[in-house]
Amino acid sequence: MIIQPKVRGFICTTAHPAGCQAVVRQQIDYIKAQPHTDGPKKVLVIGASMGYGLASRITAAYSFGAATIGVIFDKPAGGVRTASSGWYNTAAFEGFAQADGLYARTINGDAYSQAVKEQTIDLIKKDLGKVDMVVYSLASPRRTTADGTTYSSVLKTVGQPYTNKTIDLKNRVVSDITVQPATEEEIAATVKVMGGEDWKDWISALKAADALEDSAVTVAYSYIGPDITHPMYADGSIGKAKDDLFAASRQITAEGTQAYISVNKALVTQSSAAIPIVPLYISILYKVMKAHGTHEGCIEQMYRLMNQKLFNGAAVTDEENRIRLDDLEMQPEIQSEVQELWSTIATENLGTHADIDGYFEDFYRLFGFGIDGVDYTADLDPAVAIPSLA
Ligand code: NAD
Image 1 (cartoon, protein in one colour):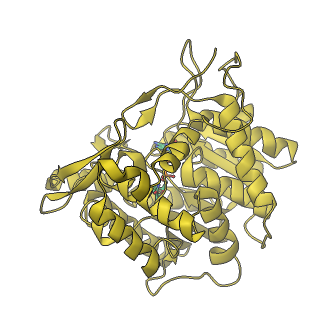
Image 2 (cartoon, protein in one colour; image 1 turned 120 degrees about the horizontal axis):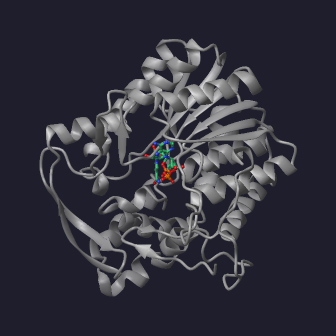
């Protein structure tokens, strides 16, 4: 099969195995080239196939030599369909890890389910005994609970509608969008999906099975961002879920396992592309941070998290005990330049006011496209095995 990108809305329905492999290789090479601190050696990553979770897995493996178990929810190739990029990423990661003598196993299934929790715990008990770090990096539009109810998360405001600029990524047109407030029921459902309940369930299940070291650390990811995004994000329905995630970190810590929220930078991932207003903000942010030489991707962020903020002596936190990887994004000079560009951005000046090309470069990279050195005219077999699932 000759694999080309097929973009529908804000997702790409195809993925390129050689491209995804090259992107994973680049992330591994980045970590290998950095100085390392000492850190956890047996790491469970929930949501390990893309974005921040994948970068967390790569960082733990290649900074600390950690054995990693990744929980993913991805599709293998079938018929004329390619596998999902998370599938190819995981296949590539396991291949590289094996070649480098690192333990890496994967569970593919719904992380919210009891069955996947049990399967994961069985594997930990069998191969590792206990884990000493749990990364919780799920980003999902829905969750089905044990009683069979399915909850869907929404990306809406809370209370009032909010109008601001957004970008239609398909046509590269800037226009105003009014985001409507979520109902109470929608807010509660968003909290069910993206809040802290399932994180707490994972930690309780691991503890009950004696699969978690007493000294273990667990981390989940959040976002705050500037005022222009607050009604949509920090103060919106997803923000309510993130408040719940933060409350969960306190509860997990109070119950004896050190839990942190890491507030990460806004980046192009499959999840962030779906949020109104935010992609336009990201493309301006990229422009400003690249000009200042402070731009980072997921792997640079996760490198700093693990080697500088979490495990290099005492954790570096703000007054609310959160780790702030958004420190560079939120620098006053960065935000005032973003604000200035935001106030005048329009379709006609997108090229000068925002790094739209950088945005799309990152978007296509998520699916393994646009990578130097990859032959996109090659006829490939899309069926690639994840070694531990083969
Ligand atoms: P992503 O879409 O790149 O990755 C999400 C991962 O979760 C994927 O590996 C996906 O396969 C997995 N997943 C989803 N549903 C699953 C399920 N039911 N079972 C198992 N795995 C499942 O997302 P991301 O942007 O890396 O987000 C990860 C976390 O980081 C989220 O909590 C998000 O809110 C947070 N965050 C993201 C940004 C950003 O700008 N992208 C910024 C700060 C914080």
